[in-house]
Length: 125
Length: 418
Image 1 (cartoon, each protein chain N blue to C red):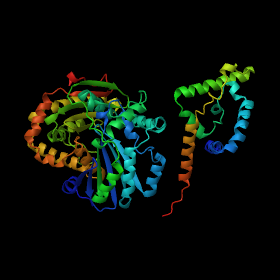
Image 2 (cartoon, rainbow over the protein chains, first blue to last red):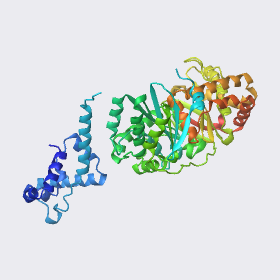
Image 3 (cartoon, one colour):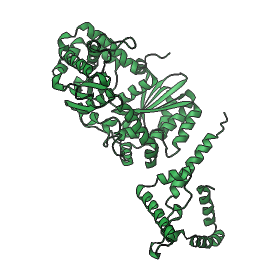
Image 4 (tube, chains in turn purple, cyan):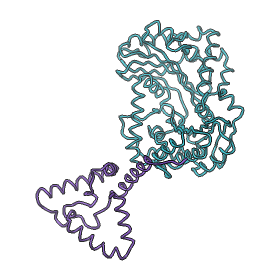
C-alpha cells in the first residue's frame, strides 16, 4: 500500500464521525504501545525508506530538516544500544510528531504514478 | 522549397499587439508550423550571474497545469519538437509541430511562459546538473572560453556577463531564478512569432494563451561601454588566442562584420583555408593552427573578434599566427583592396542570410528585431561601402584590443608583444 492510499483512508476515517470515534482512540493506544516516540522518533522517521519515491522525498527536504531527521535516528539508535528510553521532556509528543514528509511523499508518489500511467497509456486516434 | 526568409518575412509578416502581447504571424501553408517565444532576458539582463541560463534550462519543466514529463510525452504523441536556447540578449523557446496542432502548442507555450513551477527540487534534481554539463562542455573548447573572456574584458558588465553558469560556483539560487523570471517573462519583454501559420487563428490563440501573463516593464541593462585589457586562463585542452574589438553605438555597423570577412574570410570548401590574409598567414605557420573571425551583433554594440586556435602542443605556432594576425589587423587600412572588400560583403551577406534562412532563424530574427535587440538585417549589407569598411579598419588598427589567451599561457604572447 502506498503512502497516498494510506492518506486517503485516513482522510475517509477523519471525515466520518462514527469511524473516528472507533479509530482515533485505537490509534492513540497503538502509537503509545509501539513506543517510537519514547526513543525520540517521529512517525515519518520510521516509514520504510528503501523505495525510490521515499528516497526522492527525503532528498527534497530542506537541509536543516534532513539534519534533524538524521539526528533523531542516530539518537534512537543510541537509545536502542544502551537499552534506555529518553527522559520525559525529550520524548516526542502529539504536538511534535509532525508529518513533515507528507507533502514530499505525496508529490513523489504522484510523479511515479503519472510516469506509470504515461508509460502504459493507450491512445485512440 | 522555402524562399529566403527575411525577404519573405519582410513582405508578408503580420504584426499585432493584442491585450499587450506582441506577436508576429508569418502566413504560410506548409505541413509544419514553428512558434517561438523570444524573451528579452539573456545574460545581459540578469542581476545574479547564471540566472538567465538556469531560467532558460527551466523551459518545458513542471508548470502549474502539468508536469514536465506529461508535457514531453504529449509532445511525443502529437509529433512535435520543443527546443530552447539563450544568448547574451534573449531566451528563445520554440515549438515545431504539424500544422493542425497549432492550438495545443500555443497553449503549451503560454503555460510554459506563464506558469512554470520553478521548484527548488527541480533545480537540484534536473536543471542544475544539465546547466553545469552544458557549461563544462562549452569550457572544454578553448576558443569558447577565450571568446567568453574577451566579452568579459571588452564590456565588463551587461554584455560582459558570463553567458553560462559557473559550474564551480555555488548553486544559482531558486530565488535568483524566480527574480529573473518575474522581471523578464512579462508582456513587455516577449515577442511571439508564428511561422507558417494561419494568421487570424494564430493571433486568437496567442491572445487566449498569453493574455493573462503579467504586464511588466521592459528590462534594462547597463549601457554598453568599451574597455580593453587582457585575460589569461591556463587550460590543457588546447590553445586559443582571441583579439576582440568592442564597438559601441554607430561603430557597431554591418561594415564591421564585413571587415571581419575581409580579413578572416570563410572557406568556400569544407576543410579548406580561406584565401583571406589571417587564415593564409596561419596556414603558413603550421597546418595545425586554425583561425576564426566573427562579429557578434548586439543592441547598440558589437564585438569583432579574431581567434587563433591550435592543439596544446602547438603553443609556439599559435603565438606566431597570433602575431601575424595582429600585424594584418594593423596594416589593414592600407592593404585592403576594394576587390577584397566586395568579396567580403558578399560573404557577410550570405552568412547573415543563411543564418536566418530557417523557420527557427527567421523567428529569432523577427523576435529580436521586435524587441529592439541586436538582430540581422540582410539588406543592410547592400549599403556597405568600401570606404565605410576602411574607416572601421582604421579605427580598429589604432585601437587597443581586448585580449584573451587560453591554454599554455606562459608561451602565448602578451598584448604588448603583438
